[in-house]
Image 1: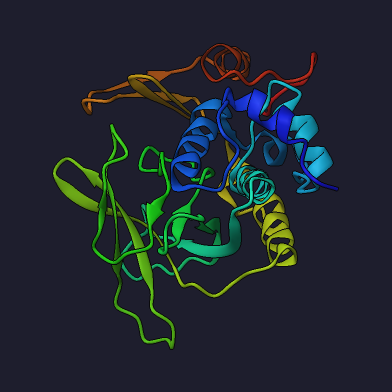
Image 2: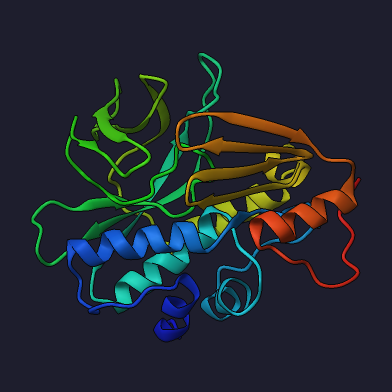
Amino acid sequence: MTLDLDAYLARIGWSGERRPTAHVLRSVHRAQVTGIPFENLEPVLGGVPSLELHDLEAKLLRSERGGYCYEQNVLLAAALSRLGFGVTLLAARVVLGAAPGDVRPRTHMLLKVQAEDEPTPFVADAGFGASGALLEPIPLVVDAELSDAPRRHRLVHAPHDGPLELWELQAEKGGAWEPQYEFTLEPYEAPDFEVANWHVATNPRSPFRQAVYAQRTLPGVHKALSGRTLTLTADDGTIEEHELDGAADVVRVLAEDFGVRLPEGTALPG
């Protein structure tokens, strides 16, 4: 099936000329990041999120829910393809928060996107659940900086022994560049992410099985829920943290602060 583009654009609140230009790419990308929350409730509740388009439409477009990286970026890839962009699926290894020498699997999904009016492709990613996530796509140019206000990003080449160049996305934090994830330009296919999605959702050691994670970028503030800790990061870098009382309080905050509403009677663990 093909994506219901009208429903997608209504969900993210975007209207404009439907052409595969760099301007449209930037504005659609930002609209999805700010319009559809990041959340991992399916794995926490013991399920595996479906990556089928009709299920993504039902969950992310027609109900008050969000999704994590595979759901978000499968949806974005489908929308951009409908708009006429060239889209290639890529896989990244998250390095944010990794200890020295810690090697994580390539379980994060991102996109390489070609616009009709730019010779250089872009890296797009609407599904990285962190305050250092891209708000707009970044040109695939080494050492070029992107001011996707209020954030700043750059792509660099990381040391690597393999045959392909290793790219690293970095976010500016407190005057320093903080690595987010690393990737090569080897194309991946949908079945690759079906396997990764199953692993991330079902492995008992996966962090997405163990606690609720939600993210929402709003004007002036980025909201993040990690377990029972609610973190509010203002555009100027000011941080507030609040500890929630229990599962019922988490459900309330998900609805009020993130726009994520679970079916009536759904009980979160703990």
